[in-house]
Length: 152
Image 1 (tube, rainbow, N blue to C red):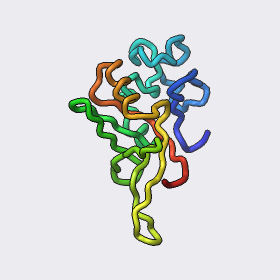
Image 2 (cartoon, helix red, strand yellow):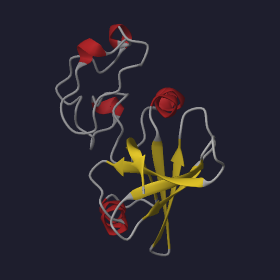
Image 3 (tube, helix red, strand yellow):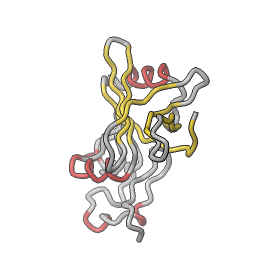
């Protein structure tokens, strides 16, 4: 097994054979384990985030330490996005006019600010995120993100 703990993908099937807690998991082998609209007490994998992006309480710190997460908070139809990177301080997330999500970070060699591009899986605009939050009736959600490895 690798050192990175297994967390199932947000979309698709849960592969219990890759998980290191399968021996004492109460949802192992249940047919509902890949449904994000069920609670973990009903059979959803405790490491699979629900529709609002939350995993089981005991797994939250490990989940946040494994993935970079974007925390979305809605207030008065405005959206505030914050990026949490394991081992670093939180960063604000912005959107360019050309459609890229980015956060700002100081270049260690030259000292000027860089716009590092990230991808939020399945969400291409602020309106997409606001619509999703409206659908699940939430003012706060958590999303996984990926680093794309370049700057804008």
